[in-house]
Length: 372
Ligand SMILES: C[S@@+](CC[C@H](N)C(=O)[O-])C[C@H]1O[C@@H](n2cnc3c(N)ncnc32)[C@H](O)[C@@H]1O
Image 1 (cartoon, rainbow, N blue to C red):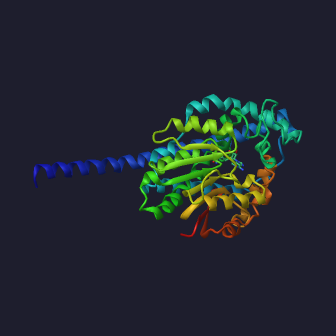
Image 2: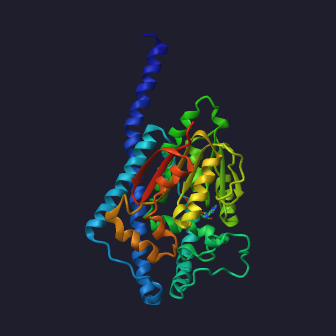
Image 3: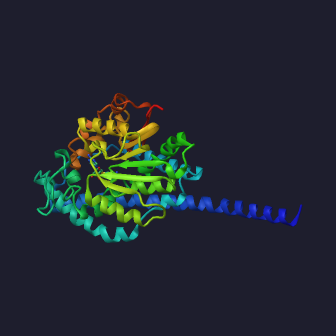
């Protein structure tokens, strides 16, 4: 063995020894990180419910108590999704660092405001005000179904403050697992764009519809670092937030556009993949169909459409009380229709084939292909 060979062997052994210790430590850190988010979410909800009972009992919607056996099932699904996303990171679908994505600055800045907004939201719930917008918000030009205080949020999706609070509110709602649910789209997305292996990575185009504040685009950027990314949303305030958030990460800035997903401002067959997270349950049935047809139009033959949204009755009948509580707690006028909707049939009628579904924690996923 030459000196160079020996050096190389030493380096390899040293690296694998490092990995041997580094990986379990990182996994432990991830488990502690997620566990603290779970505990925080549970504590926040328990405290806020007690506070509302004291301050504004009529604004604290009545929900069905969840059976202990159901809570155990929920906990099991949560552990499973966290294990699945760790495995994906280990397999190299995305970097492990993505699992620790948390802005403490944003948290410290906006968490106190979440409490203040909760009191306003409970007042709105009490008064059954569902289309309550501040006078300075311009509500012209938006579809009627969109002008709602989804989640009783102040100004719906149409103010900067709503955009600042949204991610924190959603993460608390899902006990710290909102990003874990978003990240379940990444493996089928990466798999889907493999169909285009003759296309250079920079020329792969991926569109995230209803991109909101950009969290999904950020995780797509980590998964497909060289791809050209695009995002559309109806909310100028959420797009502003997404622009600010995505400007801080390395790589090309995704191109963000204000647009209605029913009429995408792109050429036919333009994208290799389209993604969508947490929008379908906020659309009336006919709009859901139009959006699916638009996505079919802009996806290239051979391309993939990956959707993530709430679980549904057909796949999660045991979780019916969770699904009943959701629209009782939050203003979600289209949710009851959504949980009974046959999205596979909609995708097929638009032309998609080779459609599969998955369920992770409280979300469902559709992976649909445009025939090549
Ligand atoms: C529940 S949020 C989900 C945001 C983001 N995808 C996420 O993962 O958090 C729903 C988003 O859909 C957007 N939206 C609703 N209807 C839309 C439409 N017709 N066209 C484009 N965006 C729409 C809203 O502005 C909002 O940002």
